[in-house]
Image (cartoon, rainbow, N blue to C red; front, side, top):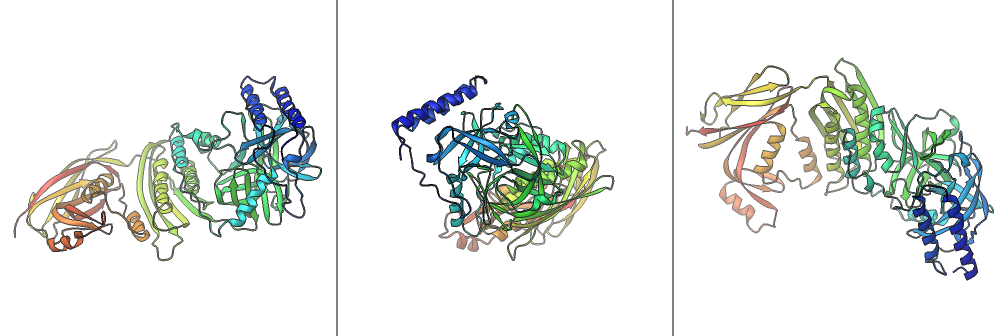
Length: 637
């Protein structure tokens, strides 16, 4: 129903004058906010742009009040936790309603008072604090107005908007279909840990653009973390609307009690020896359903995050953004299942899917550190948090700078019966932050599995053992020669490889190489190369490399990845062959090749003009770089 013209005129005057009073003495940037608020308030004309419907009770125990019933000057109460776990009452006065501030969502603007909010302003962590008028639930404190304002003016998400999450949850399938792996988060984290500034921070978690209205920042408590990792990743956290702080878990038994409106709640992305918990406030509890935050956390839609209670230690006042320091509880109370524009929804008693990670790091002095933690099973976020957990563990042992070499050995267990474990073995070295490319390699494997085009697969657990050496164990291939260039099939030749290790004298390694018995007379190419160069050679020979056609082939391909501490010897010769079904079939008879290529579907079979007849690997306990090629001639018997 539209507003009567006299009421509409009063509403326009009130919103304009009230907000002008609030911001009249603030920085000039607030003028944009006033203009935006006034514009939104006036755009509705003589009636509402859309009908949100009659307010309905979320449960028998709690009635609600709709925005149509709210009038400027109305007073109500809200609840939040200032210290400990007990919600305390503050006062709310309605300033006005901003219509259609978000798609299908209005925003109630209110002035808060009490609990010291006049000094702290709207505080990070209050997101979700329930607001009541005449005993009926109106919504959740969720938005701040202005960049540096300590004035306790808040945007309140209407409860009918939050109630849509209940409908969405009722329509949700039993299994979570998560979004694709968010590579932009991982690339930003990798850049920051490498000491570079990523260029995509502004696009990671957009808020209401330019209006000065934004979700209240979400406090994130990080426990068991190295301060350098937290410091370097802070720009990423802040871009996502989080306020990171080093902290730990709560030892209070009260924090694991049933959740209640106004109480503190947290969702965990990591738990165990390393913890990462984002906290807010419970808006409403109806049976096993919990509504909280009043704004998105990651806006992931259907999600699956652990939900725990939280204890507030203290409020911290700041000109930029006041916040409350919170410690998460030890007991998982349920799972967050919806993360939408209007808040998060959790189910008490639900079991979230998490991935156990065992990281064992051996230092150069013989010391051994073990980190056991869990990351969320959500495939859009878990790779990034696994990366953070690995970087944290390695940083704690190796330090930030200095010559380091990392040797990694591990396995990833998948949740599909009949699939082999993914096996990992490689070496990385760098004067600083060698753990970044190491962690990115693990993440690349992780992304291959999660984003594969064949079938959905999950990770059951991850076990990694990493050895750290406080020196650069690297070497360059400088020369290659053989004891002879003319050979016969079945002959064994000696391949000599000269290596120049980092800051050490040159050394020569000798490798015996046997020419296959069925090698025909003609020219042979001998390539001596590192893992990367050999992978590029394979792509050239196979016109793009091996192409997995199912999940089993993908796992096999990952398990066949070459290691950087090997020297590879490859013999190849001109020969007709084919790539069929994603796998190489070298040196085929002409008749077989014609059958394979006759009437083929485009892309099913690819002709090969050169074939690798032998490849051998030789470990040298050094990270090798370089390649050399020699020509051999096979004589007739």
